[in-house]
Image 1 (cartoon, rainbow, N blue to C red):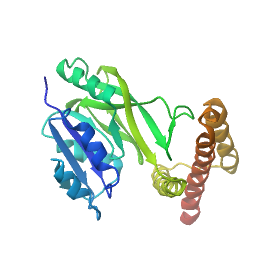
Image 2 (image 1 turned 120 degrees about the vertical axis):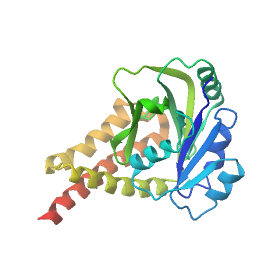
Image 3 (image 1 turned 90 degrees about the vertical axis):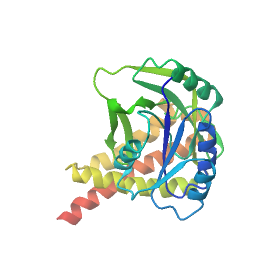
Image 4 (image 1 turned 135 degrees about the vertical axis):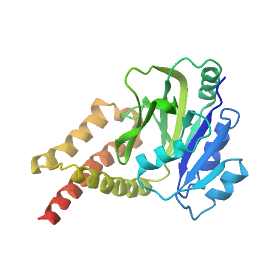
Length: 252
């Protein structure tokens, strides 16, 4: 049975971190929290729950998660975000995998709570994530702020039953603010890579995203929350493209 390190990155997560860490107790042999200098009670809560608390300046989501994974004492790592927790069925599935480790990495579905509603459509579920792996065989990659863990070619994965519960947004205002923040990060990253966006794309991309989320991905079955998600998803791609165009205009 390989020992398991659970790794979480935080910044001002006093609202979420206790729920996250408690779900990891009894599953992980080590709790590692890498914090980018929170100003709330995050440190106090983490230490009270027995986590090893390390502060490190934030360098982007991908860089921060790779640095955090490197702080784990054990090569087998379970990575959660602070606003996530293991459901009981997933806890049991991870314990079984830990007792009989057969794959290089394990995936599981993520079920998101949006403003009090569990979202089972809208393209949000099943949101399969690779979060349990042998850290010697991969790294965090992707494009900030959208990170993903990638194993080396030829590595094996298995899917575990049970949901990773994700408490995403507590209010629509929080969602709108997060869209603005993430859209600026994504636009800077795309500008750095030389990407451009046309007026035609700027007009029709948001329309397509709404249609995809609400109709193709059956967001209508998520009720009012599904409609809001579709609208704000369209808004998100619109302002991300606006920010990207602004970068090029300022360059001129």
